[in-house]
Length: 450
Image (cartoon, rainbow, N blue to C red; front, side):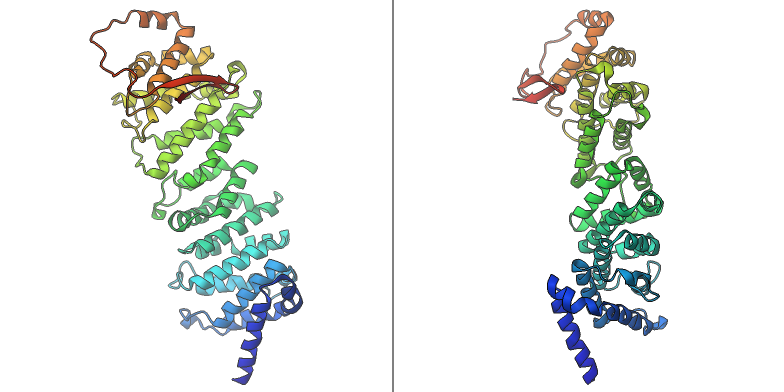
């Protein structure tokens, strides 16, 4: 009993010293090997018939000290390759206490948090550490740790995955494993935790790196969209309002593309596919998906608002992938076309104006787009939007701008409009929906409310 008390006093001193950099390096780091081996001894003493025991104070204290050591020092690196090293200890802790298939998967939030934080701090140590962690922990043990309502766990796991990505030199398969079905299941679980329990900056950093530094956005979205229904996850929910800046980044990627780049690699294709998913008549919208849809439509509008249409890769992609027909069909659906498979009611106020803005920007000084819109029979549906609509601010202005562009290339369109006759007095209230102005800048024409 006396020996146990002395050891506990020493542990408390180590824990106290481990909170500051200099004291940690001088007084605590030399005991790292002992702490790791003691973790193994504690795990050796747990019988399989008694897995639901409360994690020992010793085990938690050891992990706290090891976590702090990694925050200030990297002396534990050699332990990764020892027979009873830290990697093996973390594996065993997860398997004993957090087996995803076992009855104890939701035990001890504190222990789950400590294990995740040790992994996160250790992942900053070296590329060898990251590879060892990835090989031994991902994806199954990460799934086990991700089953939590603790945002600190999610933040630590996302940080460790980000560090693993940084360490990937193309031969380790770390990046590929993150965007495959199992990897995206881990990401879905982390996103679910974030949605329920708070923002995760490390997760945002990880998604940004995967999407834009490594061009894995389409793979990531595709895999996340196919997550099991048991995750209660909407196809677009992972890209929620907290990650809306990803859409903005896509827009800048589109506008900076050289005109001779292969259109098949244009991120515009992904944006378009994302929009189509979110405007399907079967989609059940919430505030999150509305925000994603609005940002995606605005992104596409900005990408098409380029003065030099003749050399615009965005317009080439817009035509080659028959996107014109989709946006004409979206507009017709709002006007009661039952043959259209798109939403028949606005998901959010201003949706109709956003659809019109895409047709307007795409058709500016682009004869091929103008003719394609006319061939789709869109002249009269666009004309029908030229009346003020309080539920669709700016739709009238975007409709008029579209008509102007269509008349530029087509004598037939001009003749059709000239032949129209007023059948009843106008009762649209004139400017009751507000006053607007059209401005032209280096990025093209824009409409804004005064």
